[in-house]
Length: 290
Image (cartoon, rainbow, N blue to C red; front, top):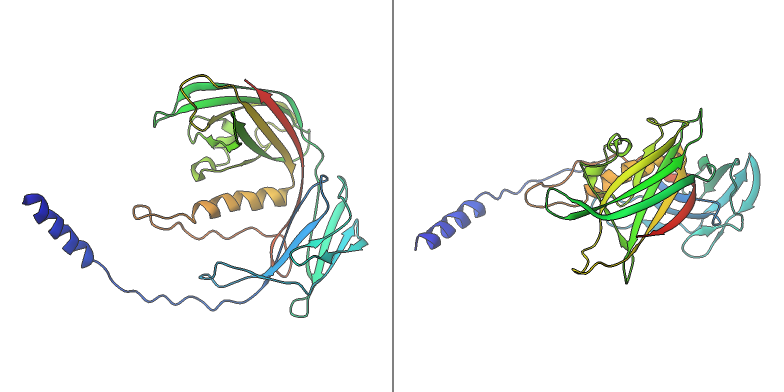
């Protein structure tokens, strides 16, 4: 009877704590959004849309734009629209500056520029399963990845680890505390990232060995051999700033009764007269087995 009594009391308390609040959102001003991450492994693919009010979960695609691509200030192609994206026939190259310019009947001179950094270099890589248990008691694996950095230059990188036991691929989860100082220096592990972005601030011009602690999907009791796929990207500063902000933005999209809703995150953009990102990267892929 006491249990039922307290249940009734708690229900009464919570139902009487509700309060209707009117929120006046600022009037939304529609703006163009241009997105394109490009590398030398593919042609340019540009998505152009309109921004939407905060309570809308869709963006209106723009299909009537004139989109021109410039290489080192020389116009090289007008992109064609296939009903979804604006595509080119040109594969970008390192050491070239690329500029995109889009014009529509509604929006004019939407433009941005960026470049592709040189290919990154992995000197060596290895990993071990079940090196330790994290604070929640889950087995954590450990990868050691040695890379070569360019001297006298500010460089930025993105690292993606994908685990493959017998069956499909799985993204890994990164340990928020017991990890490499370069990664801890970025203050991103608390946002449960699926990828890691970092600069060479702590190892400029040196060979550096990362110790990356991560969790993999639960395996059977028996020891299962699996492989780890490493994607290392050498990224531009624009790419770095955008993806770092995106991590926090995506994390704050999740909410619950205990933590509430995350604070809004202003997204980084290098688009003039609009929003979005136009940024380059180069990538190498390495597969290793235990």
